[in-house]
Length: 434
Ligand code: CMC
Image (cartoon, rainbow, N blue to C red; front, side):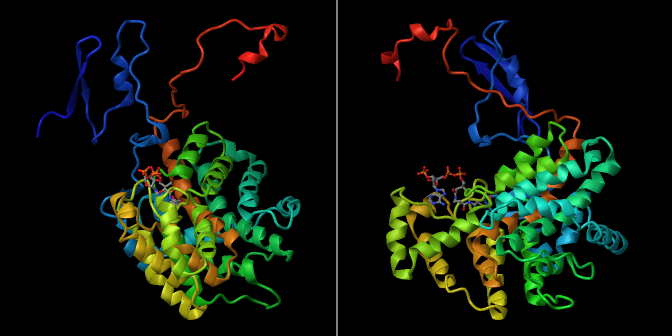
């Protein structure tokens, strides 16, 4: 193999430069020395939407988008989803290694004993209309935790950071369940420390008059798997938001609220909600060819298909699709499933999708399971935000510990007006307006 460097000739000046290559990348700052004159700012790279820019070095999650591979800390998602639990995976993401039995029980104890939220947060929830979108309530609810924990501002102290991490992972299901109960006008159900992380979440959603809520083990396990699959996904839109906002050294509640906000969008975590709406709008199998035609004409989007990184079947979608039958055996089959399968079959035979490498992503089948489990469509992105919190926090923690990171501040290419003098209003000619 040749030298690990890049030779660049600037054809504007004829000067040659050598730039080191490390881990398959050059440093953006190395381009700055490429100048046409001493007072030139130096060369920048232009990369809207970060299509080809690494913003950090990370040891958390590995994705091979061409092969459809996903690993957390080196462990394949298939093994974790089959053999692990969500809390164990959260520990792995945050600590880098699987816990011992003692570490896991200590970790689970801590999370279980931080699930309660301040009673004043209930009043805050009560301020929303009954039909407020639960994701809007969650964004605000997470941000509203910030003033309750002013010590969280001290991001330099490792122990303080750990406490906020535990609090956020523990309180997320409580906040999420409260948004749901609020939308139904039901009294909030408090956490039950005898239940698992997912079992307790189901309890806070669906407990009514029984002395102790008993989650269905199949549904509890299915939610556990769905939570594992959604726990982290390296530098996606919401994680980038958490890192970027967190780089200002704001407390993690505000940084994670930014992540929830980013996740809300229909191109990101809101896509699972859009898939259900799309399937309902298509209505029946015989309308699928017409819908696919509209997608190809650019009049509609096939929600739950395509991914910035995966150019192959999303491994998470494969696991969810396999799991669907187990869940439907307990609930009842989702009548939209045959339509989703047919839509996938037709799309994967069509050159439009094949040539663009558009495959089902994690959101294509997850909503069908959530719906069969009894969740309203608006809760789907909330179900994504709960487990993604551990990934956001692992990434936030890594960013805070990375000596190379500074406040995130991209450059721009300014293409606006050159310097000009202010024109008093009386002298402006309205006919010159565009
Ligand atoms: N339906 C129809 N065409 C599509 C789709 C789709 N779902 N996704 C991409 N394309 C086309 C796109 O129009 C473009 O075509 P052309 O080259 O002719 O202009 C080509 O495929 C490349 O797409 P892109 O928009 O440049 O790709 P991107 O990497 O910027 O976007 C994406 C990735 C996920 C935003 C996009 O595929 C999309 O909008 N998918 C639907 C929404 C969705 O399911 N989002 C969930 C993503 S996975 C979970 C998560 O991250 O939350």
